[in-house]
Length: 125
Image 1: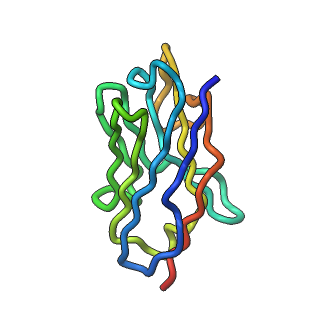
Image 2 (image 1 turned 90 degrees about the vertical axis):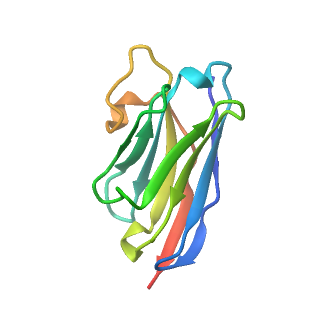
């Protein structure tokens, strides 16, 4: 069983920054594909960013050049650095693990086997 625990959410003004962390249990974290998703109130959960076990990254167009995903395999942790935040970034942010193989597309919710409980980010204008 793999457990994921997000932290780092909160309230921030537009233009500000936050860094989310996701601590992952599991002995083979270094081989997991990891993703960040978000779900705004009344909307479907959407892909934000993903990182492969070789640290290749992929971003949704809406966050490209503002958000950065990274991983520290020694700490079993994946991060999401959020810069230049906008009110439309307000959502619950979830991290997810694709333990593979085979691995699915990073941007697809169905690729992921395990999910965290989510952390709220609210961006005020």
